[in-house]
Image (cartoon, rainbow, N blue to C red):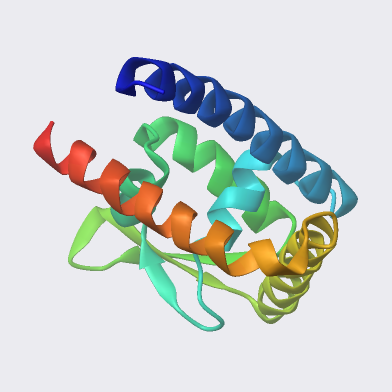
Length: 148
């Protein structure tokens, strides 16, 4: 096969894979009464890490106003705590509440469980080659993004 055919196949596969991954996130978020954006925001946190709102917006590729609505929802659900930076009132630190830490642990476990279930539909001898290939794809994609 030539590179053009392979590029077309990869383009189609990644398009469908992205759509399916988004559906997976939507379903997991709904189980926990979260929006997909709230789910993605919570997935950024380590167990007890606090993150600057600008860093969250950058990582999620969101406008500050869109991020504020997501943060408001998570504060209302008591999953995160928002503190205004006394040195710069436009900036805030966001951290997980105890309830949020428990939820993130549950989300991480559920996310791994979903992927374990997905792997069960793939021959075991293909698990490592799949992970290796996806690691190479991610690396190449990150290099492409860095060039842009």
